[in-house]
Image (cartoon, rainbow, N blue to C red; front, side, top):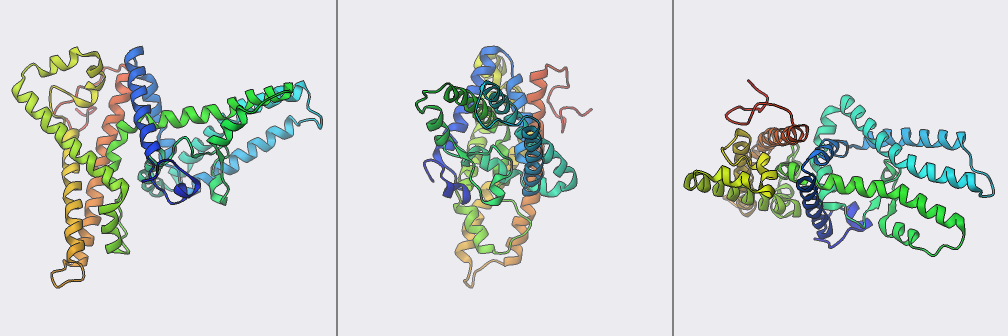
Amino acid sequence: MQIYSTTETQKNQRITVLAIVETVLASVIAVVIAIYFGTTAYYAIAVCGLPTMLLRTEKSARRAQLWFLWFVTALFRRFPFADKPNLLDAAKMVAVAVITPSASIITRTLATFATLFTNFLLSISSIPKNWKRVCFETDFFSEIELVPGRWLDGNEGSGSLEFWRSVTAPRTHWLGWILFVAEILLFLPFFVFRFSMKSTAFVYLPILWIASSTFEISDLKGYLKRFRESEFQILGLIYSIGFLLFMLAKLILLTVYKNFADWWNANPVAEFFSTYVVPSEFPIWQLASSINAVLFIVLWVLAKSALLRMDTVDAWSAKVVEHLYRGSSFVRGILTSYAVSITVYLTVEVACKWSLPPLGTKLFPWGD
């Protein structure tokens, strides 16, 4: 595992320690904000905004790039810069710095949902890979994608270090200070947006269970090896064990301490997590996640057994193993989609203070 991202690690889709630290830090800050201000509105907005990045595909990125460049070209044609910098041009520069991040994010969002309607399966299948990239591969040293889809043509975005070197450089002319303000306004929204998306990792954690899901296995041995040894799979294993321990602890506490739910809700910090912990009962979506965790662990163990037996007289049938993992991908996908949809719904419900049916034995909290 790399310490921080580089151009090489991003191309090879490697997880970095710094990206994980940032994700944890962003999640903690989101919780602190929610507790301090007594609202989860910020968190709910971030949770609902993350799909704009999770559903991104090469097609949507290409479409966003065309739309963004069309807008920027039209903007500069309408408000051209003079050959010699003046105050009016400085004002235009600041205005462009304010408009560009919004235009980039808006065109990216519109293009993503346009592609979702035209290439639904392609967009949905990109979710695990994109979530991994946002939460575990992207960090402070990662490139900032000012122009949507810039990576499609092999171009590199603007790096965070280059940005900080630029804004901290000595300035002697008034135009230099205008550029300083423009650079801050240009880059800061992307840092905030990236950090906000990372803060939602807690809600989308079940995606760890479908990171290796696939319906096409061309190289069974390579697939099983990745299932066992990839960094992302190790994170999935840790999360599975942690979730099962959480469920076991909850079962013991609910059995031993009859007033556990009241004690939990009396703590202002713990109260924030009540929506997801549900200290008074075991909702079906938590049981579904438990099944997913057990299934993931079993498949992880079986992968090693299958690899050890491969190319021996005791080898398991390749077709049976392949069908097992392909079939499990479908089951894990259904269970994960169910769990994530519930947690997203609950996050929005709490933020909006809707009066909706409480969780209980219902398959969905909005069902009759």
